[in-house]
Image (cartoon, rainbow, N blue to C red; front, side):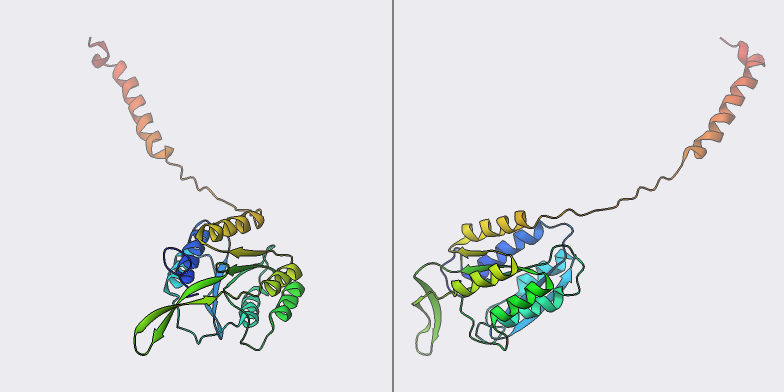
Length: 230
């Protein structure tokens, strides 16, 4: 995700911006965050506290996990969080720019588990076609850039989506990634019943008795000499 083929910086930076916008558009959906490289970790469990989730998302950085791509482990970690959920729609959005090369669980095995649990997986391959510019730390020259071939296992990502009833997308830049999240948002719209309660605090008694007292005073005044004043 360090490749700098997505403006304005790299893939991870843009993916975070797009995911942030997606989360900000939610209202009643519980959302969590799993990050992965050679291993997978739950950074935020399912929550309705979008403020906390956005803060956790903003803190995600490259290099915090050993390098690698453990897609199967990432999916299983997500499924462990979703399996007890009673929601009608349970969805995983998997974003990756590589090929599964680490972890104990194969991605297609994780997809079969997801199908059994009734969880839909949308897969997103991130990266331009052909080559992309990657930053590399050279011991002599420091940070340098090399052009490397973009390798995304589109066949596996497509199969994962098909097994679970989801879709595979390819994002080659920021606009296409934004459109993908918009499409997923439209596809996963569900009706949510929200009960609202209105509490009425009756305050008319505070004015009733003073009003009655004034009316009585006017009636009494009318039978006295004050009632004859012009």
